[in-house]
Image (cartoon, rainbow, N blue to C red; front, side):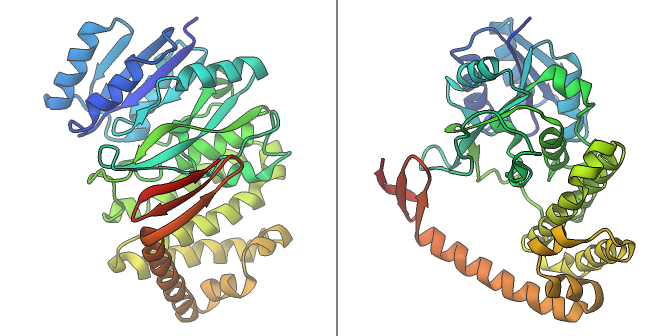
Length: 356
């Protein structure tokens, strides 16, 4: 059995694709297959993919219309032959020891998932900052033991997954148009179902922040998050064990995710999204499913304003938006990053001091 299947969905990334593919084909772990799936267009991406496929027999190139990120990755999952699966996005790139390190950890601890930290980067190395979102775990864990696993940023490309685990639990991506938020339901399904999760704060993926095709400005992408949470809700309700253990937490995560979406969408969609947001949580409130767990993690006054007084809620939203804007301005000027292994100071996007 191949050790790792690497799935690379490709769409209009001709400027970044070579850097990504170089980082995959040159992995120190050689026993891999590389499944590259594009949109079937006769464009520069296809030429680059075919060029790499002609030189490396491990590459499987699929050129056909997908319509969305989820469909493309699902095609890769269906044909993958590896014991583990990695999903690497075609505008990012990986450290060359990523797959070897994560594979060895997965084998040592018999994991369903091994998840690592990552770097946020802009340009070609001009700004490359360790995210410090993933702590080192003392050993394997799961979401029943550590509910914070569900709150980790999806970052599905900074992990490897046992393929048998994904297939047994019927974990796939939602097939919806566009690419925004399509990792949300996949990540939450994985973390709810996994019995053995290992976290490492070593960073391997360089996650690009300046791809002009990545945005949430279109109307379709504004509501993509709603589709993802509808999928998660249905997935959880279909399994009694998940429903008993996670449903109220999922509603809490959904509430916060919707507010986060509200803070990033274009002004023209804000009022409409608040209507959708309000209707969803009014229904849940009237059904009596929002209980102690939910209100310990979300301010009751704010939730009640969303449900019953949208004018008051809009004022709360504007205050939070202003605070977010100020924080972003300060962060762009100077920021301090602290994790268990080091402290770093970043000035104007560049790391100037690292201790540890």
